[in-house]
Structure formats: structure tokens, C-alpha cells
Length: 508
Image (cartoon, one colour):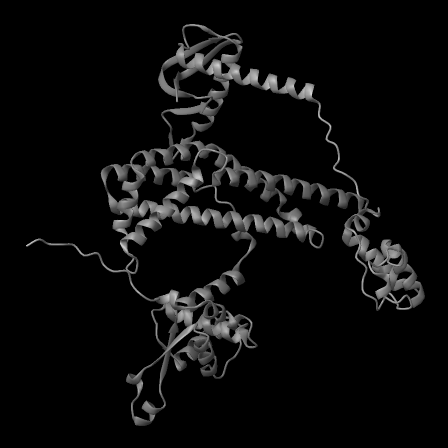
């Protein structure tokens, strides 16, 4: 009798958080805008403390006791005499789950009084934690993590080894950790750049905050971009090494070790495939990777901070800023002896009495009586050029583009010639021996460029020095190999001595 394997059917219907509709999820945050929002917040904190102490189901009296203990520790906690209405409201908003506990009834009267117990719903606890995260967010939470790159490199090496050996549980652990680390890095970067934007917007009102943190910000960003530039080629090579061991094999092992109960095998495999795709997109070669985008955003942020520092320094040196100008103007208005003088000052300052569109007619003048005041009449449509520059728009053709074709062709020819020289020099380096001849100028430039890339990637990792490093460009790869003694390469510029290293150039 043949045995057949039956795949488990996909679970039907919604479960847990998926059972909440969009309106239900929006209602979870009603407590944060309600009239007694402080009482609701501290009551949820009391329930969270009970949850941390493994008191999952709480009666109203127990919730009151926990709230009273919080009030003794925190004077800002409000005094709540009756927590029952608050618990019922939180249950109606589905932050709490309300169930009946008949075991607490000692007699028939208590049984009829319906003793309720409360606990967090899964979605309600997430909503509460989201509010707590917003309330507890600070400047120290917005930082770029540069210390994770060695750990990521180590995990990628271990992931490649586990995939070769077929260790599904180790693959699951390493891939889960890498996914969490990269997600955390993305969130940290997003918070950091938002913090820089807020700091730039609030600079006019509180420049002292910016001046107090400018050195720390610049040092932090420069160290991060330096570490990212050093580890990026190593991480890209490590991802490629993992991919060479078999991406499909990796995803299959990870999905088999996944223990999520309410996901089908197909859903688990698709989820891990998306995670692996996101990981390769982070450190893949090319300008479209997330690492390159993060590097560019950090360099742009450094330039923005330096520009903001220049504006603050110039404003302080001259003693004139937007804040001082507005304060001085406000003092003028306060010093006006009469309302007429204040109106005259307002007229001179803001010049609202001479609008540029005063001579612009209506599209259909007969529909608007001339005796009607412009306060009551419909506004006139004004062209954008008249508002911005004060010039009446005119109907003109497309402007002529001046092109210097001769210079353009000359620059293009020089560019093609330089590219051809680099390609031929790279081919000569890959075909010929480095140590048996004198390299010409194009070959020397290509060799030095590749050597710079390889040396920048040869960095200490986890307390050890990498045994070999490589750099690639123009279709060739230069590899640094350790050797005894020193080697010398003869070039038209002189002799290049390398202590303990031997160069090897191969075609890609």
C-alpha cells in the first residue's frame, strides 16, 4: 500500500492581529487622544508591569493595586479612584481583552456580579508600545550604527559555511539575525536623518542645541561613512560567496527550520526569499545598492551640517539673525505712539498696500460690478511670473539652446581615447607578467588605481588581518597575496616595492 504525503492546508480566516480591520486598528489609539488620556496611559503601564511579572489576567482590584504602586514611585501618576470605567473603555477599543472569571465567585451574588478579568490583546499591546516609543524617544536614539559591520561580515561567513554543510538551524539563526540587524540599521538611519532635519528647522529658535552637538554629529557621521566605505567591498564579496553556495538551497533550509505555526511552507519559503533578496540588495555591487544610497545620504548630511554651521557662525558674528530681526521689529511696533503709526509701520514693512496685480482685470469684467469693493469681490487670477518676479507674462516660443558642437566632439573624442587606453592597459596587465618588464604610463595608472582599491579593502576584521584582498576595475582583478620577503614592480615612474605582498592580475 503506497503512502502519500498530504500537505497541510492553509489556515482559513483571520487570526490574531489579522482579525483587526483598518477601523479597529485606528481605534486602538483612541486612548492617546481621549479626555482622560493620562489616566489611560498610566493604567496601561500598570497592566504592562503586571504582564512583566507574569500576571496575564488581572482583575480590576489588582489593576488598582498596581496603579497605586506606580503612583508611589512616580509622583506624576494621576490618582484614579475607580478603574472599572477605564478598563471597560479600553476593552471597547479592543486594547484589552475582557473575559469572565467564574472561579472568583464565592457565592451566588458574586457570580451574578460577573467578575471580569482583563489582559492585553496582541494589537493593543503593540499600540501601547508604539505610544511609549514616541514618548520615550530622545536625541540619543537617533544614531548611525557603525559597529555592526564586523558582526555582519562574520555572520555572512558563517552563513556560507552553514549552507555548504547543510546546517538548516544555523542558517535560520544567522539569516534571522542578519535580517534584524539590517532592519535596525535602516530604522536608525531614517531616525538620524529626520533628527538632522528637525535640528535644522529649529536652529533659528535654539541655535545653542545645534552648537552643543555639532562636533559630535560631524565626528559620528565621518566615522560611519569611513567604516561603511571600508567594509562595503568585503560585505559585497561575502554576499557573493553565500550566493555561490546556492541561494535556493539556503532558502529551502531556512524555511524548513522556520517554526511559525500559522504559515504554510509555501508562504514561509516566499518570506525567506524576500528577506534574502533584501539582504543582497543591501550590499550588492553597483550604485543602486542600499549601502551606496546610505553612503551618499551620509555625505549629503555632512555637507548640510557644515552649511548650517556656517550660517549660525555668520549670524552670531554679525549679531543679526531672523530671531533678532523679528524681536527688533516687534519692539518697533510696541513703541508706536498710536494705532495709525503702527498701521503705517506695517504698511512700510510688509508693503501690502501696493499689490502687483492691481492693474490686472477680470477675465469677464462685466460679471463683477465696478462699485464692488475688492474686499468683497472674487479674487483675480494672477500669473505665477507676475507674483514671483513682477513681470507680465508674455507668449514666447521655446528658447534656443546654444551648443558648441566642436568642443563637444573634441571632449567626446578625448573621453573615447582615454577609455580605450584604460582598456588596452588593463588587457596588457592581465596578459603580461608584472615583474619581467617596465610598465608604461597607462599601465602604471591602472595598476595604482587597482592597488588603491585592494589596499582599502585589506582591513583588520575580528582581531585578525585579512590574508588576501582584491580590487577590480576595467574587466580585471588585482589580488594581494602574502609572500615571504618583498616584491618590486618596475614602472616608468620608478620602482614600486611591496613588503610581504605579491601582486596577481587576472581577467574577470
